[in-house]
Length: 493
Image (tube, rainbow, N blue to C red):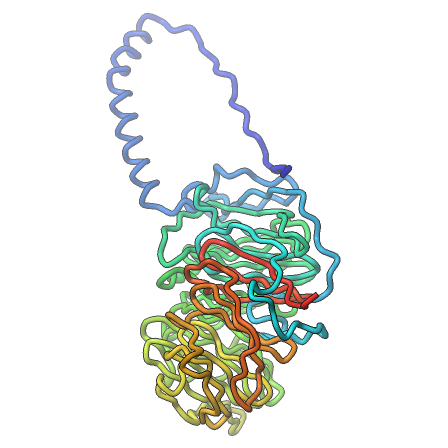
């Protein structure tokens, strides 16, 4: 595969050696005994600081600077901001319609609305594998836009986050933008899904580096280090929040100096920020947009509760501390009706329904019901609201259908549990639900409140930990396990 790197070479200046006098020679002779010792001490100290520091913070001035992007000015201390390297390859975007432009798809609900007929059964070998690639250890899912597949990967040998753009046709790489950051193995490394539009792609790396690039060319726009710049805390097992692009703004939950912020994708300017008076910190939960009583807002589950903020200026519209998970809040709020928000989680959190009401221009969030985890809870993947019902995998590894009163309508039989840990993803397309278990077994079932009807099943990945969120477009289903990503043809052709 041919590649081209865009970088600025650095030339060493010629050394000038003036003649020295005898006195100067004696001074140099005496100093020569001291200089090696001093150099060794400086080297030891420098090596220690480098090892305990984050490469992304310490080596910013040693990175190749892409020649096709504007220079970023230094900060008030004269320190150049982090820059990476853009590589171009031979991949070509697929001539295919359809998109899955962010975490949970175009409508933030894990439902494909494409008019594509999908197969109702498979051969014992499963759907045809169109392509497969090696990926860095982790659970980062794909986004799809205009025949391109976007993945935030981790290049372990080079110790770098890698934003990869691939062809949906054959998986060949089109371009890659990478920047150095030291990440140790901790139940995987990268685990977030990019947000993509016709102009921008925004990613959030394991150590909370937010990057904005041109979605077609990979051209660099800006980067923010949420830890260094805004005092955010990297969540346990690294960042799991998937960024959101809304009307040209990147919406990011920070949980440091500010709770949430909106950033102009073109310039990197912070347009507004939400105050954080309770010092809530970042969780693995992603921000979702919604609207209530004509008021556009974003909802976020922070460490100490749930908050709704204005999409116009970031001001807090409502909050509640009735829902919080001590260890890890992973799943995203699910809007299930006008003013109804369904919350779920693991670690014995169970689930809860909130109802928003408005009184004297004040929005209030009140608990409608709460379910114990054995009735329903979801540790890792967000449940799906479809056709008036909620579908998800509960702690006993059974697919469960709930009504909006919190009543269990049905569960998959004990012979069809999605284990061993029940942490695999699921999405809905063409009236079908695709469910992955931890070991790479893919199940196809009807999605209906009348009961569980399984249609097909096949082992499509080797595992382990097939936990990455799914993506589907043009009848092509993208899945991954810990080290491999595949694209399946689920049209049945």
